[in-house]
Image (cartoon, rainbow, N blue to C red; front, top):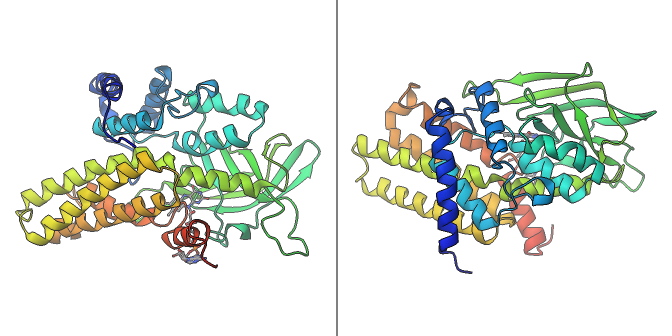
Length: 379
Ligand SMILES: Cc1cc2nc3c(=O)[nH]c(=O)nc-3n(C[C@H](O)[C@H](O)[C@H](O)COP(=O)(O)OP(=O)(O)OC[C@H]3O[C@@H](n4cnc5c(N)ncnc54)[C@H](O)[C@@H]3O)c2cc1C
């Protein structure tokens, strides 16, 4: 595979750059560099306007097929797009869960009616989604969910508690894993789980923010107490939601994080600046770690081009990013003990990157998957 940039790639890069620089140099200058992990609470209204602006110019859902409202970009072009997005320091995307997780899931598993109802709202940047998987007693062991849904006429009635639900406070919809039949005598817990699309703005849904060390509260506890959704809002078979849920997880661990990954280079650049300013850039140990971080990010980029959906990629980028956070505080030195305008961004990087090796499948769980499914090792 030739990983060098072609003339077409360069022309495409220029097109993306022109669009982003034009928008972020003018009307949207205030959102530049805002939002994203660790700063998710920033400038909601302005970033929503940005979502709509991207949509109006065809720059949302760039990897989706054209027939579903996407731009149909190749993987190479998606990488270029996200590189340029990061270079321009364009804002963290509000629609990331719908665009990266639910949309591709509906394209793969949804009915034509579900696709027609839900995909356009995601493409337009009008409907935001959250992911209702984890519960207090079910994280890595996702089949242990206790939330249940019961049929009542033309509706499902959902009761249970979800936790760590990112961006639920902004979302109009949640894709919820719920048990629609009890575990049978065969003990197979993966059966009897359904994948429901549930509207958030209703009396049976309560959202309680979880405040993190960073001061942000980008995730929440979500309580469903008799929440309702239409009978047609089940993706896949009733009781067969596990396969759909795993499909979503594959998207979560794969190309959906490309944009985020390519942003890490900006973070490394900021770390290098601090290292220079503090006079530690020439320290042999720091130099070596900076070089290793640079190489790590380059490998991540090449892996994204080569094998975006490999089980290795989530493990790799999450680990590289967590090391980058550790490097940031080591370079800051004692200054890392005090929060302030000069240290905030790197401290947020350090704190938030701890989460990367947990969400979407912890490092240990990813290693199990690689061991069992890729290498064929025994459980
Ligand atoms: C920033 C962030 C955002 C999140 N957003 C969402 C969201 O939007 N929606 C949502 O549903 N969830 C979300 N989550 C939850 C996330 O999916 C879970 O935290 C994750 O699946 C781990 O589950 P847990 O926290 O219950 O930990 P546990 O599963 O209890 O794991 C605890 C420890 O045990 C290890 N472990 C568990 N099982 C095994 C095993 N079989 N083999 C080896 N080690 C094991 C884990 O690696 C971990 O170190 C988010 C989490 C974070 C940190």
